[in-house]
Length: 302
Image (cartoon, rainbow, N blue to C red; front, side, top):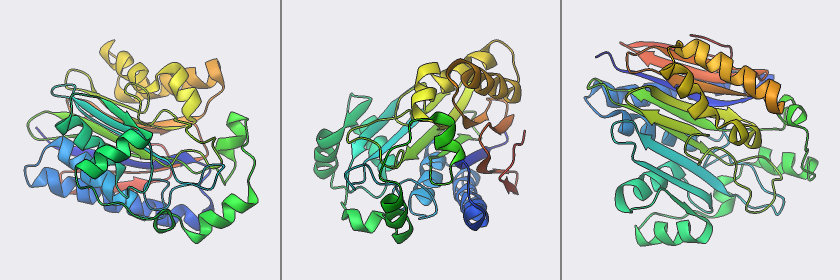
């Protein structure tokens, strides 16, 4: 089995001044994840490593670089899922955690639950010895300035994701050499969101899904729209009905646009190694690594 990893840095109107840094960031993350796969590591370890790298990169809205809610605080969401067993872990509205994807992994590995939220998730992090960081360490000067400019949440979906201040999510999907798939997604959410708002990213079947029998998906875009159509599971269902990963992604994103007027994107990998990066927003930074070949763009690909 030929290992492959695909990552995204969010589907939104990436401004020109961030475009190259976004592509460079997803390429680095794809290389990080692929190095795990090349060393015989699991798809689960690969997606966690790739997403951690993007959480540590202030270009992206996850971990370091996260957006601020309407109270000026950072609340983070993440999910990780193992396609072999359907084991899954997620956290939502956590604070002061630099790598929420790894906290989600701990929920999966160390508890009998799928999701922990808010103060409960932070208490669990403390019990596991996860290091906390001050909010200021997660927020860039750029984000502070943008937050001051846009203190009112914009309600229109297309306004949100065609406006250059609407930052978004990071994610990864992978297939390892043993045929197992996995996904991971992490985000700081939408700037100026209400306190406690949770979007699609940590919700199984919406922000991500992985099943060895069909494939792995990580989604990005307007969270409320993705939740309404359970986008990740919708894509997987099309694959189960015989559609290619590309067609499944395009059909699902088209449906979301027509049904709830939502824009977004997805990355998908099948159990046979087919993959796709598809979006209906202005741009989406993505990269893929396979057999020592690396590609990354702000445009669609299959």
